[in-house]
Length: 358
Image (cartoon, rainbow, N blue to C red; front, top):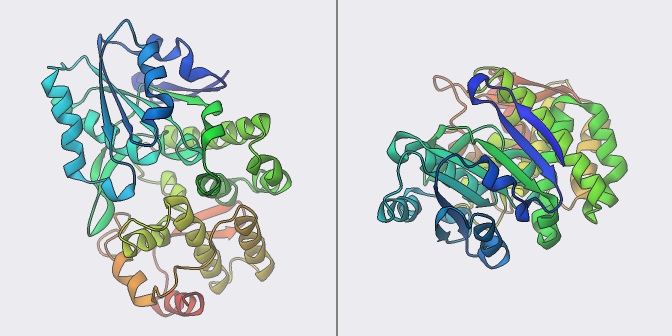
């Protein structure tokens, strides 16, 4: 097992990465109260719910099975979690466990942040995307029909338990979506990691255990360092949004269906690269490299068929990262060096969107 910490003073917590952790005593050792609410979804429950409940056999355990999918990530679904906790009279000493991908983790985190004004929660991420990104850092929330993750809270878990064995059941499409976030770390802050990804793509996509563990650890280490320095996204943490403003616009346009989050981020990173090229920051060769690495993991590199520049502008206008109505985008000065740009000329952005939309 590999362990690294997210350093946040008295709220510091550990990320545990290893094989077989879902069946170990690790989860029971980090729970601080006697009551545990395990929340999962319809797809994950048949695979892992009984195993997690078995590990918690010495606790008072209740379970919630949510409908699967980003389209259910809204306030109404939260009521299923709150109702179960209240039915069992769970106290402020209770712990919620998020067993699932990014959607489950975000919703359970938000439920834990708001139930009795805040209780403990543990992340057990079951997708590559959630293991390398969404389970770490304490961003929680739900979508609104007018914008993604517009309702939420910063609420850190007390532990993240990453069992790499669960990736064996991960569909290929979900694997590709997770690779978008792995690639993101190379593009935003570590060109050597990007080169390592390019060299090891075949091993990663065939789920070689050691290679996957290394990619998860390196990704989590980068995110833990950034979160430790900027928990609430007042500065450097904004770099983690590379590709996400474009990606969230794609998801909103598709009403959070059809494309997975990582697929939207993949196309969004290519758009960010093309815009960086248009602003004379990246070279044509750099952009080709971004496109190539995304294509090699089977990510889309163009917006959805029929999505227009106006569609992008409409959805990007309500992105939560905007400040005082000013669009904020994460661009790249070079591969491995991202930065936040507050002053992208509208005509430049439209030129790129017009060239890429089809």
